Length: 112
Image 1 (cartoon, helix red, strand yellow):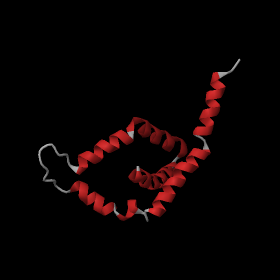
Image 2 (cartoon, one colour):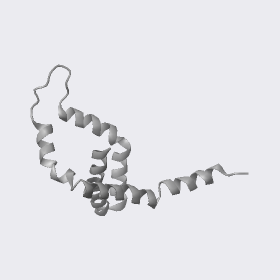
Image 3 (cartoon, rainbow, N blue to C red):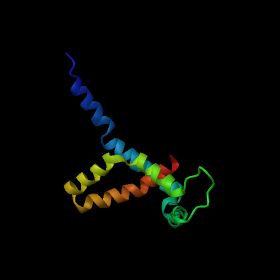
Image 4 (cartoon, one colour):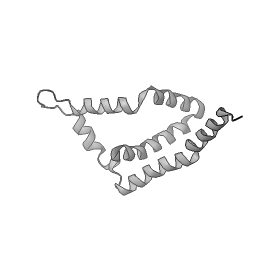
């Protein structure tokens, strides 16, 4: 008889194992290099764009509201709980690696 739990665990280990982490972070590094560090070069411009007053027409939303809507759909409560768990289990080193991964993840999100 086939053990479904064993099959699902095996698939989970393959899909979410080190290979997937390498692909995600490797893609972010590749895109960061290919876009010549767009997420760092345009940071001040982006902050200026979302904080300036907007003179939009009826029905328009501000760039800040659009950013917050996008972030709420991207981040979610799972990531918030994941960050708290990573910091409590991994300490300050986990925070450094999350920041580094976030920088290369910005390029992936931009291309997406």
